[in-house]
Image (cartoon, rainbow, N blue to C red):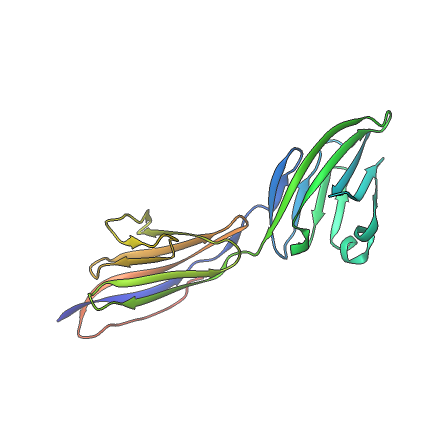
Length: 224
């Protein structure tokens, strides 16, 4: 009887990361395409006037709990998605679009004197969440197995684990981009590919079981 591998595919659930960003000082914030993002531009608006700029364009001015949007930012396509909440100094963008990716400048003035008392920049980067993780497995002539992990989404980062521990060089050979690995036929256990970017993460596992059979048996299923 010949030893072969039984492959059980287990699909893990994806999850989004926190969409709230502290932008009360110079910051880089990330948001998932199509979802909401909450940018706290200041902690206290009482007695202050806040202006938000994109380049030289004034997006809005908030003063005495009133917010006025300007130029193309005062059109339905923006006003339906952009909202500034003076009570907590938070800018809400929902849903996010790729055109929202930009570097914004926040200027804060004293209402009573008109003196500028603060200025900082916020870089907002919109990314498509990682999704649809796919594991492809092929057998090589020398008996080794090649496993490749791929995913949709922006700037995906790949990592692997075997039975819950990070994959070591003794277990497999990893490609420079961490997407492909080679392992010998006798390696067994739960092999997991985890994919993440700044706005989301997900994973998929394959259970490698050594069995005795005259042929390769494959049974695939998805877990909730």
